[in-house]
Length: 436
Image (tube, rainbow, N blue to C red; front, side, top):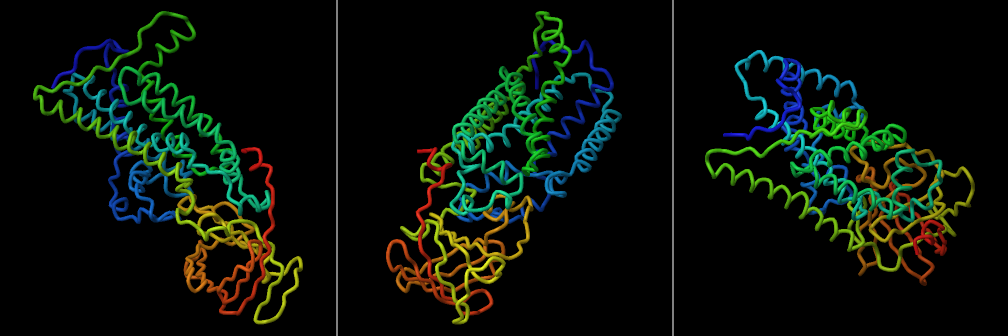
């Protein structure tokens, strides 16, 4: 195996640089490749409404989270610092055991490769999910009818980004270009610089809004900075001292056996096909069908979507008047275009901000109860299951009196009989009107 000589940022590798290089290589590998058995034993659909999402495994692999991501809802800075310290300790031990090594350019090449593909693995997910805006979709009818104060800052940030597809697509395109640059050695430095420009504001946005990927963005930012660290002095000379300086170029590694060279090339293009081309095609297809993996893929009852006022509500044959503070009466109901129904009830809610359910409708907001439903259109029956607690269900018979009126009757979660009259209100939403 040989590596052509290239201009080095250092005249020789100092001891602390050798330790740092080894630590960086260890960090790049253990934070990218899933080593824990729990990863392979997980339910890849956990936390998703979209259980039929065909390419979910690609996302699961791209979002493999080292142990320090898991606790404290993705903000385990203590775990991150401990991991960095362990990598430095391991780098020091490796240096003690491998003192005879002379050629550190080969070792740097493997770090360079691991860091680049670690970044591309994760950022290709974020990039395509914005280029085809399915990561932060436009607010649903239920969300448009949820009080502003009932959202957490993180959920509100995602929704406000979703109302501006132009901005989301622009951000995704910028991320995609940076990801592509990272994958090729001649443009890696430019790609890493773009990544830093992208990830610094993303990190601070997640800190400020508690948007859920705070440590993930710091992790990718760390890998990007590692790629630039070797040329740190040269950047200073270029930007501050205005000198003409050549940045370090990392040449392609070459094996003496041709089959190894061919294998490396095949692996590279297999990666590009699966995580760039196939992923882009999959997200594009999803977006073209009017879907998003953040919300259920199953269609709702045709012609039912909209906002409905509860004109009459009976519980065990007793009419419940519309009164503020009543914890049993439904106030309004939303039928989404997909198979979700949300119900506004004036009773206490438990806010759920678990990172594992960020893709669901009830994450980061209160005020409404969300139900997924299956419909028997022959017998006019609905089975509603609470999105947060699928063991809780309602059995309802429905009758569509006219396009703007629906009658529901059956039993609720407590097995009480209910009778509901829904009148559709054709509301106009400025956020939606502005898009037309």
